[in-house]
Each structure stands twice: as structure tokens, then as C-alpha cells.
Figure 1: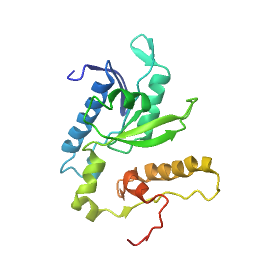
Figure 2: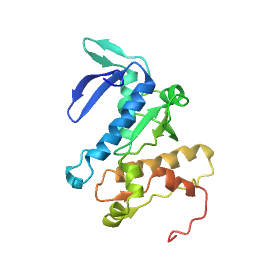
Figure 3: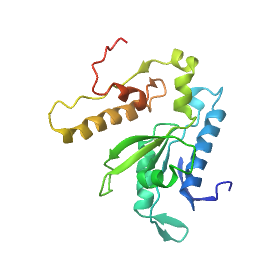
Length: 202
């Protein structure tokens, strides 16, 4: 209600919500993730509720009380790209909100998405969510094994394969982040080493 949104439907452990404003959608998502971080404080890891959120701006088909179409499908795909506790938005959302909200974004590049004709440029909202909290909390780091996936090098000499190498790295990061017993270093940190000779121990 605060952000003038409405829940369209609940689907198992997920839900579809509609907002009249992209800015309101993003601000609501950030507040939800911050609230979930607070709610999970002191809760055993296997009892935590951790959400992923995808936000898209686009045309939808209204059928009764339901919504369909690429506008909805892209939002669902963005949700699957997001880290647990994270928020991913499409370029259309980013372009509408970048000068209207204080939420910082990280460009994750273009992603090919199932049943979507053209690649979608994805941006990650950098909020006080579970992932960013974990980075700054020594307690979390000390009790979980940590892992970093360094960016794959494009050995082919074909610049177009760079997208594939980055995508492979991100897919592995996303898959590993689903394991609650691992502390996975974020893409933002690991991609600082892209194209650099790395001392692995350091």
C-alpha cells in the first residue's frame, strides 16, 4: 500500500506484484529486502526466509485478475538471475529510476533468457540485503567456508566469446550462492580481477 502496488497472484513460494511506477516498485523491493534482513537476524540459517526479486517495466496482457506477456516473463527471468536476498532489474527499469532514486545499481551485462527473443540487459540493485550484510559481518565469514569464482579468461581470441565467458562465471556464482553453507564472494568483487594476473593466495 505504501508504494501503491498490488499483489496480482501468489504462486507457491513466490508472488507477482504490479506497480504503477517503476520507482515505487524498486523502492518497495529494497524495503522488503531490508525488512527480511532484519527479520532473519538471530534466526538459524535453515529457518531464514530469503527472497529474490526481479523487476521489469513493459506491456502486459490483462485477463480477468491475472497478468501475462513478456513484461511478466522477463520479470520472472530476472528473479531467477538475482542472488538470494538480491534484486535484479531490466534496462527499461534502470533507465526510468536511475535519476529518481538513491538506490545504486551494478551493470551485470546482457543475459539471454529462456523464451525471450532478445537478450536483456540486467542491473543489480545494491541494497542492505542479505548478501551485502554477509560481506560486512565477521561472524558469517568465520562460520562458513568462503569461495570466489574468478572471471574466466576468453582463450579463443574471438571478442564475441567474452560474453560467453562472463556468463559462465555468473552462472556458476548464481548456482553456488544457492548453497546456504557457503559464503560466496559477490560478482562485483570477483570481477575486479578480470583481465589481471592474480595471486590466488592473496
